[in-house]
Image 1 (cartoon, rainbow, N blue to C red):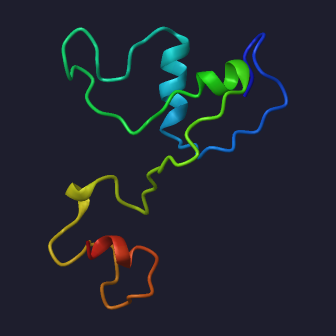
Image 2: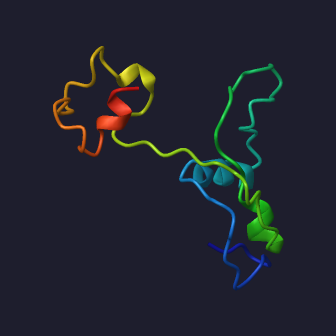
Length: 102
C-alpha cells in the first residue's frame, strides 16, 4: 500500500495483522478507533495497530509484537463444552483440534 507523498519501496519487517487494515483506514479518515474516545471504553480494546507510521515515513512497528490468528473460531464463546460441533475431537492431529480443547 502507498500513500500520496508517503514512503516508497518499503517492506514492513514487524508483524502485521489483518486487524490493522481497517484500523489504519479509520485513522486515515480521522476516526478514533483506539478505545480512548470521548467516553472511556466507547470503542473498547483492540488488537490492531495503525500502519500509518510505516506508510508515511517507513518507520517500522514493534518487531516483538504478537499478532493474533484464529483457526476457525472468532472467540472463546464459539467453543462448546468438550470441543466444537465441527471439529473431530477424536483426531488430535486435526487442524482445529488444539484450539477446540482450550
